[in-house]
Image (cartoon, rainbow, N blue to C red):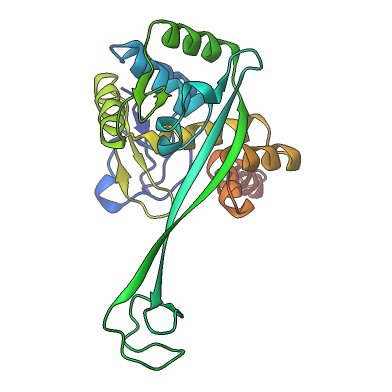
Length: 258
């Protein structure tokens, strides 16, 4: 178990993040993100190849859990060492039955024709975004071995790599984290404490990438890899993973401490 020393002021000694008052004690077991060595412990706690592959997928590809669960055998190119990720977002549109104008959920009268909204027409639209990601050699070999052993699951005419639902994926990560005795994680913006979840592996990938290369090109490639529509979403990982602010602040008092 990883123990993180806190300053008496309630700041984390490594990350210098203010923690909630209830956590202001001598020792705490909270962190903001997982380190690669902790992901390794998580994978070692898995009891089958499928679960180890899921953990590796989420961390080494940095994909969303919904994206990982939708990967089919035909989306993986073993020769090229790539996987095609399909990100699916469902959008609902409400419209007036009388004139077809767009409506908000709170509309009682149609803004176009003025008629009272008794019932609406609901239309579900799917927006698909695709991106092709490189895969490291060890993950390729694990994938090939998994498929060769018949691990993929036939569903609706397609062979899906992971034949599990989102709830089961969350259970697997939580159970492995508890078995590996990994620390709980704190959201640096809200101060809320969370258990290790599939999305925390995506966060761990992003922070690891930023700590490895935080140049403009590195952040642009990370944005493309993660499938972020906004660069601001990607840039927040630089704030979490970097030490620039703490280093800058420390330099302000170097002369005083001599």
